[in-house]
Image (cartoon, rainbow, N blue to C red):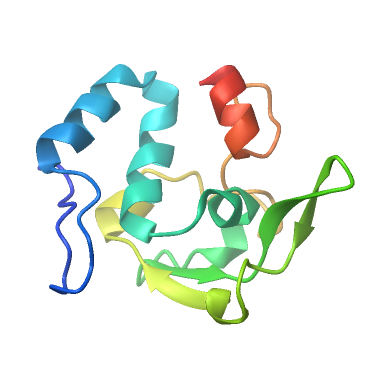
Length: 130
């Protein structure tokens, strides 16, 4: 399967990764994390938003991703809250090939991405377990 394009659709947007950079990072990741990484790049979701997604937030027929909450630090603990900005609640789309890699045969309220130990993925947990 061809690698996902990291190119921007608009000249005003910034390309943060070249295709070579994307592929290098993907190869350095453990296979467990590769679907998470691909989804991360293609969904344009912030890490806290991506980790807060549930199975029910993904439309397997269209690739629609409903972003309605995010992990945030509060009083030294992680908690679920609203996205970072007022316009943070949104729907974005990922390719159906990316959706096909996700485990969507679980309850709609189950977190979409889990660590190998079964906890919801947050940036801190990725860096600890990735």
